[in-house]
Length: 503
Image (tube, rainbow, N blue to C red; front, top):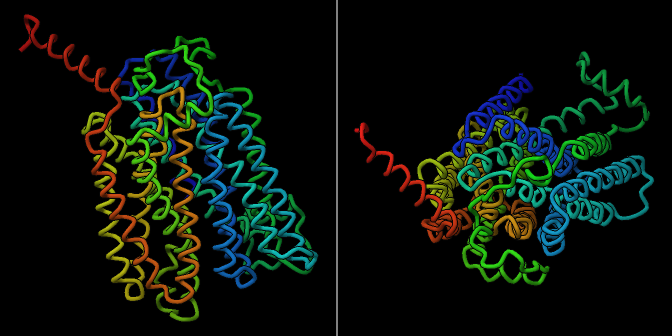
């Protein structure tokens, strides 16, 4: 049923893509652009599976990996991810998104194979190195390669999508993130269940398939390492598909390039050589870009502050509060699916509201979503241990709101204000701030929750308030080229209305 719902959701996304054509591109162009973004997007979604499989492995290992240890490992990866933009942003601006996504997928695949090997050695009692050190190093390297993914997908988007279309692409970007979360949590958990040494009851078809293909029979332990090695294999497959189908720009696919009306459109000199130093200077000296980055910093705290810790919190109530755990079972079993569906909805609502109600301004829907998150966090504080259904619903709806913010900032606003020449660097800085925020919450909540889980939602509220204040600051902001384009369109529409025979 879950897979059917996700498939219907994917079909709806594709339908909306083909029915959103404000610039009247040719059908041939629309189809070729789909062939371009779909494999690129699925590669990015499975990068998420190869990123959050660490969360699934933590739950599978139980007390063998404590909350504090998990927090340290996850923080090591997210901080490395956050700082990697200084290298990968300018590099992807130079080499293009296609090479960038290949670095991401193949590099992450290799690191996941090594993490699978480390898990095998640890569970078999053969790991000589401290587990926290080994996993921190490997996960940090995984996240270094992962950091090429977002900047690459947005780099390619910047050449293929006009600013007036990017709200919808931001929704697509949010959808891909949501699919990745579903793959990570639900598919990852299914892999963990199928890799158990002893399976209670009748085996499902998937469990029989996994056990037959991988011949799981250690005799001593569950084959938890498969939660790392299977996503690695999937990434290699998508990398091969990207090699064949992906093109960096319309020109490379035998179409004419077009003015996307982003910040690059108003550059005074197209012949200026964009060095790494110049790119970084232009991005860091842009106050709007700094605001976008700070908004996404707060979204990083909020997104992973919910997504990363809900399952851990719910599972910890199993012995301490069995009644609460029983009320949480629906959310525990369907966590990935729920995050996927609400994330898709949140991304599309934010993107469509931005493009159709606010002339492609990204600040207004981001501000609205932050207000929603403040209210939801208050609800979580009140019902933390009192009502598992209301608490679970509030946690899930947080994803709807925060994916809306993240898809608008990382997936859209960074490209708008960075321009296609610097879009990888701009989006890298913004996405890097997301994971610096994620690293902060990982260390903080890992420490605070060990003392009392009530500190968890209380810790997140100030970041939602800060996100609201920052989003309000950029309420009216648009790139100059976008303002010019909108003005020209409005003038053209006015002239049409003045023609004889029109009322």
